[in-house]
Image (cartoon, rainbow, N blue to C red; front, side, top):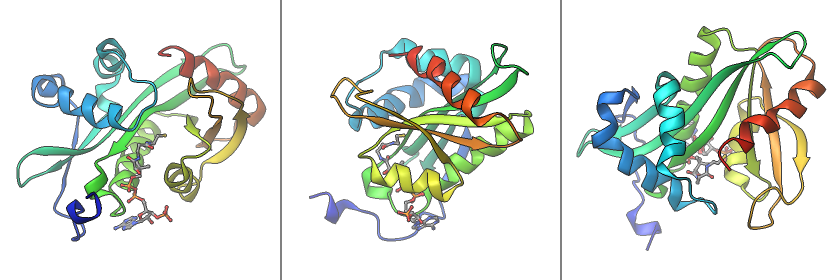
Length: 190
Ligand SMILES: CC(C)(COP(=O)(O)OP(=O)(O)OC[C@H]1O[C@@H](n2cnc3c(N)ncnc32)[C@H](O)[C@@H]1OP(=O)(O)O)[C@@H](O)C(=O)NCCC(=O)NCCS
């Protein structure tokens, strides 16, 4: 039963670390397992490597120091969008997952804040992502952190569910242009 396996204590002892290539052997299988558990559309290993090889510095892991197991992960990228005039530097949250036993203790909040801080320190103008409209925990998390719904994407996922595109503006940008261009990021790995 999931309920009985939940950790009751606040996981303040968890270790949060930035991903590095030397951690691939130890953590990539666990990252894939954690993320694909809740996904309707599993990604190939090449999708993970696409992000981790180029933007490992925007990927953070939450580790339980008791056994060094992975309990949470966020995977992101940051790219210039020259097609947007003037060009913007756009952060993109591609994947986020927390082990079900550790949810509700602020682990995802910490991971998202770390990724946003890292993007801010690299002069990001905005951060975007898509999430299923039925994913209430994710919608609440992102809206609590200041993300705004910029667009509804009808029947966006293979399972027929719709998505919301969410955007967090870190500097003043044209919200309409920013929202439209975010689709480019999402389609790269679908
Ligand atoms: C969505 C998901 C990442 C949230 O992870 P989480 O670690 O439970 O999230 P948090 O604990 O940070 O936030 C959840 C709630 O716990 C609360 N919370 C409890 N203790 C907290 C603490 N110490 N600090 C901060 N928040 C805390 C938060 O306020 C939040 O409340 P809310 O429902 O009002 O937003 C997780 O449910 C998950 O992995 N889902 C499956 C994958 C998924 O949907 N990923 C997102 C795809 S876009």
